[in-house]
Image 1 (cartoon, one colour):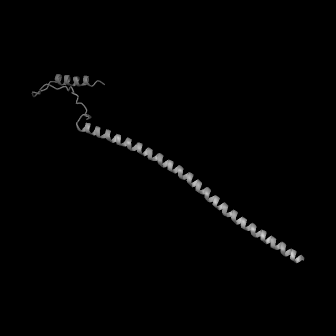
Image 2 (cartoon, rainbow, N blue to C red):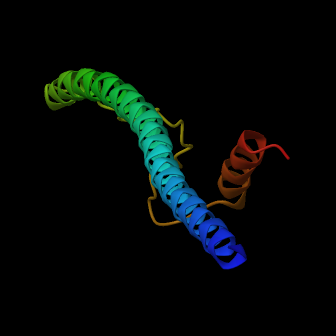
Image 3 (tube, one colour):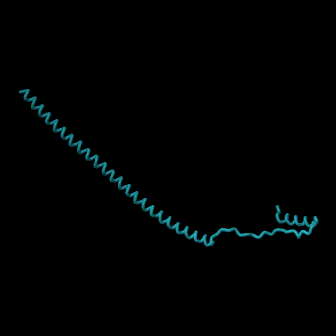
Amino acid sequence: METRGRSRKNNRSRDMLLALKGKVTNLEESMSSVKETLKTKKLTKSNDVLEASIVTLKEETKVVIEKLEELEGELALYRAAVGKGKLTLVPKQHKMDILKSKEFNGTRFARDVEDFLWGWKSTFVW
């Protein structure tokens, strides 16, 4: 009878072990599905953040494009104004008062040359 008792204990132990292995397998499968669900939720959150960033970037791009179009319009106006000569930047011609000597009639007197040079010196005072 002891042999039978042992075999019953062994059978019960085996049955319990098989049942426990089945539960462990079920638990492992459940854990893997939970992990996948968590990964999916994390990916969904990341995806939402990326989509929000994309929307923000699109809005900023629209603003930049509008500003660029505005500047292109201004540039066209400026080009038209410059083309008509309204905004040309030409320096004004200043009249220069240059000392001129008397007409040369063949001979020069030292006094005339000295007066001419003195006039130049007084013009450019150091």
